[in-house]
Length: 217
Image (cartoon, rainbow, N blue to C red):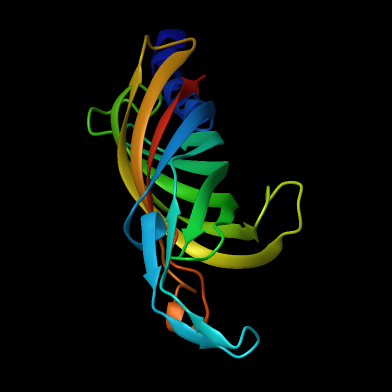
């Protein structure tokens, strides 16, 4: 009788253990390199007449350099193949606005992202957060665009702030054993989904390729 009861309790113990395991989050940190793409990498604005200057402003070309940022993530495994991940990240990129015969304008773009992702582990390793995974999600992007003839961090700066919706998709891999700290590599593409109508006065879409190097626990 006791043996039968033990056998009946075994699946319950395993099930409860799996449920608890499914709710054990994996925290991660990463250092990110951002490579601007599309209009974010380079935008040329046509010449226009400026009433305040009383003359025609020649075509302007804006470019942004490779950026640097960091991320903090919390991944909640739901089953062997699926996890939900919360993502907090921040980035900054420097750039320039150049026009023939005009002084160079120094640019700086920074943003804070609050996002939610789905992670798919095709090898069934979501509980351990190990091996290959695919990731896709949405984020609230809080952006700031600075323009200055000096240093945007210290000199007089014209600042524009914008809150937009972004989307991202990519691939990653966690290297290491089933327990302890694991090293992660991740490549994702980010695209601005709303509020990027340049003709309406919006900043260009902040599209970039992000390479992340970090750790997950």
